[in-house]
Length: 471
Ligand code: FHN
Image 1 (cartoon, rainbow, N blue to C red):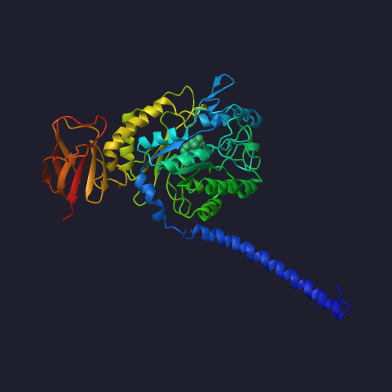
Image 2: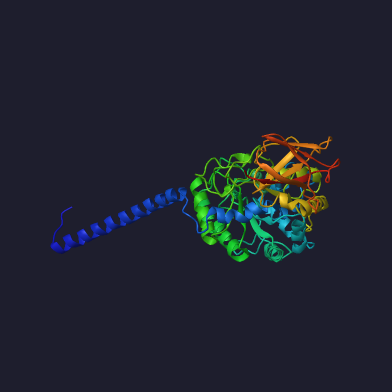
């Protein structure tokens, strides 16, 4: 192309220069993005060290999980048919079109809901934190959100902000308020709604998913953290959708920490979870702790925080006919088992559409509370057993003290304690306020025998405290 005059040559050079600048700038931003993701994968140091943030969590050890939403209206039955599987998945299991499922919101009017009653049930059970479903996979929102009308205020006759009332009651009762939030969303058009009838199709993607993440998901999380916080934990779930990836996990992790620097974020923000086992493949994946589900790991992982979440029957969300309740004995022994491996126990309740926690749950939690009132010291703030597995129960520890959780009381009044080299100062029954001394005899450098009363003090778990002194 022939350039006529000097003036034209200058204009042409200027255009050329402008194009060059434009290219470099975009180039830099792309590089910047990749750099930022890479640097994210190297996890920028949050304002609060992970240990600082995890302190209360490691002390708490026991929390209440609450799965509540409009799925409690059908309560496991659709068009007269019982729908197999967990109740909160009825929309997916029965392949209910969005417009039909939305009708349940019109029937959701939990007039018996009393936030203080729920919080006190948790508190009296010995639980220190509550994690409630702000939004589950069905996309229905349990708070007053400006990002959709598919929420408790605009879509139901109830019109009370459930999260606001629960947050207030938790603060009043010294219980940490935490929120579950699903990344998967069967209601949102930029998420999995278009996948109907297979809302959970793991091979499908949505070209607008990034818009859902950047605008809706992040927007609502800012609302939740800023309007209902400070939160103890943000408990993500539903990260298995194909559109979600490791980088998004790190980006979301940093985003939420930027909203509240001392918040704890579970590992389901990342993409590294090893299924129901719950731990992450490596710390290349975002998240502060592992989340085994419906199972208790054989052993904990030294230095790794984790929390087993579990149902009290076979469903998270309320099903009117699921009465396969675990016994109080089973739940108490699971609590000791989990603590003896250095983990937390997040035990679930699925309230009804009237706003009531099912009575079998209330009774079991009250019974657990009776045990915790006497033996809480052997759970709160303890660490994993330093003497490994024991045949008669479990063991938890604190500096200079062991707690022997005896499930099977010795018929001969002799309790053998293996793998215990440290000197024993004193042993006593934790429930015995006078801490009267129990006879202790060392039978070899590795094992002691404690003489115990004929009868166990507690049929499910009698705790013996052993004060030790190093050399
Ligand atoms: O799909 C969910 C399920 O509904 C429930 O919320 C559990 C609780 O941890 N998590 C998912 C299954 O892994």
